[in-house]
Image 1 (cartoon, rainbow, N blue to C red):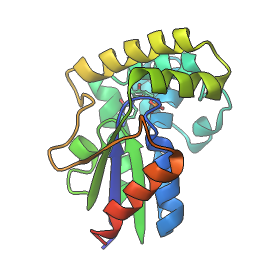
Image 2 (image 1 turned 135 degrees about the vertical axis):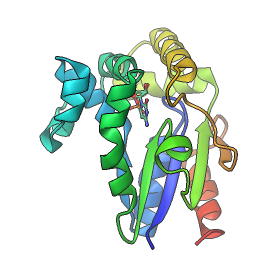
Image 3 (image 1 turned 180 degrees about the horizontal axis):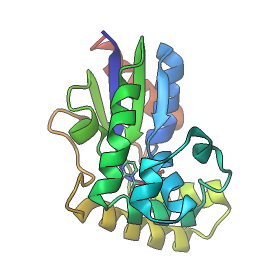
Image 4 (image 1 turned 90 degrees about the horizontal axis):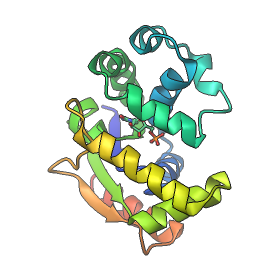
Length: 193
Ligand code: C5P
């Protein structure tokens, strides 16, 4: 039986870093599900048709990490048919042997409700804006505004809103180094292996 780790949380909370570290620590496959929504938003056209016809090479564009792609992703992510079109791929990925780590907004609640481990990774706004600004070489105040806008849209949408699953372990990375955050996540996984 494959082992699935579901990691959710808002933008720049540290969930991607934790997901990559866990995948490497346990030899599991990793899927950054935000990339799927970013690819749909960036490709343009009718979002539902784009999501239904998404190709692996669409995930390789080098502009997918930009703040604009993040905003476009969060807009298409509120369309139920877009989410439905991306569901089967994510569920199949979650069954990769010997295990898989998926990070996003609805992994523990919708995509993998049966995941062996669920983490919900958060951090305060100032920390997240500073991290994103350093990552993208952008202005922290502008990043703060964008992150707030994206969080609000992701949290209130009708379908698969960003939400902590009841059985998810909360990790607040605001005052943790990367090493400390990863150590917490690794320790949580080890208790379930
Ligand atoms: O995690 P990332 O910042 O790359 O996600 C971009 C956007 O994609 C999010 O703001 C959210 O709207 C959407 N998303 C989602 N469900 C996921 C992953 C991402 O709705 N599982």
